[in-house]
Image 1 (cartoon, rainbow, N blue to C red):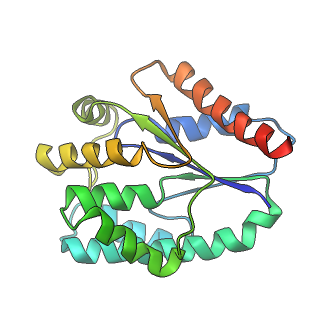
Image 2 (cartoon, rainbow, N blue to C red):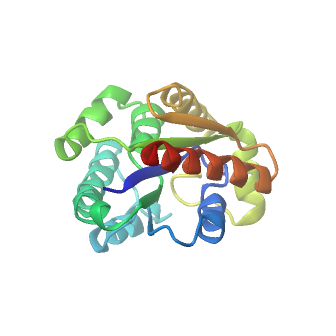
Length: 204
């Protein structure tokens, strides 16, 4: 059975950059599958288009339910594909919903976690790596590189609440924290080492 690893963190911390780096630097003999959230499946990508559309106005509860519906599809994929791969690595997963909808939109972190467990039934990743960076710096990075999507353009109080949610989540079980203020090479190497350590533990 393969291991499920999630790369998490607030906006602008470099998650996608790390994922791209892992594709180039993890050992070639590893069977690795990658997916992203929102997205990850045909249905998930359709939901992604709704969630990130700058012209879409969505109630907080609707947003939480759309993310949960997408995650149901991804959980089904994980059950099917984990036996076929050594690693499945996700760019975001459940912690994003807990931090963004639970914390940022003030729906309640436990409430959003319970909503997702309607499908996940308590399933959690083998390792979650949190890339942590002051939320203001993360937003500055995004603004300078590409501009904001619908979720990213929310106000400062929203992003502060998201950051606090991530601080709490990053202290959880099977979690590691990486300082995303370091240069990209150091961030990638630290993430890579945590993944290789997990593989070694499995082989021991």
